[in-house]
Amino acid sequence: MTLIEALARELRDAGLTAYALNSPDDRDAAVTVRAYMAEAVSVDQAVVGDVARVQYAARGGGYEDAESLAWDAYREVSRLQELASLIENYMPLHPLQPPTYLGTDEKKRHMFSFNAPYRRQGA
Image 1 (tube, rainbow, N blue to C red):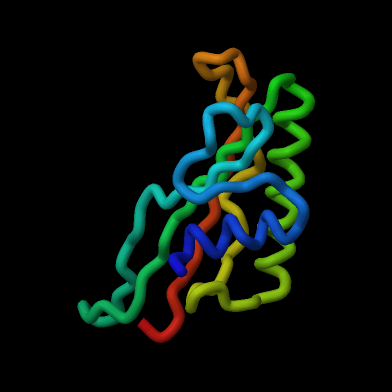
Image 2 (cartoon, helix red, strand yellow; image 1 turned 60 degrees about the vertical axis):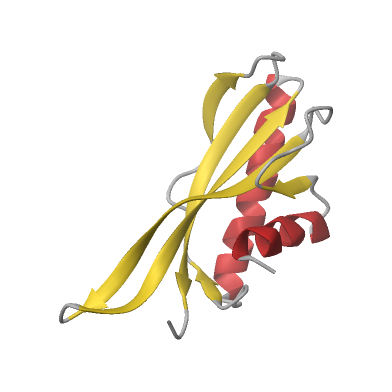
């Protein structure tokens, strides 16, 4: 299982509608989990690990629904960081920012997103 799949599963286990990479177009309320970058961690010019950055994108039919879903996902991601539990060999770090409003998509669904880093252990 990939990190993205494991993170989507964690959100589903918490009762949220979440998908890895893409959400079905027919679902108004959903959280999509996707990687958007990674960076190497080096010491004395030797790569000793990496940090994956993950985007959580929440959408809903109404502004309040989308905002609530985004904050529910944010609280769950923050809880995982506080537990310091490894997820697919990655340590959750604190989210980089709270949910931010992005506007609406082509179906007029409201969208919020936030990003969180995950440091690979033992790389």
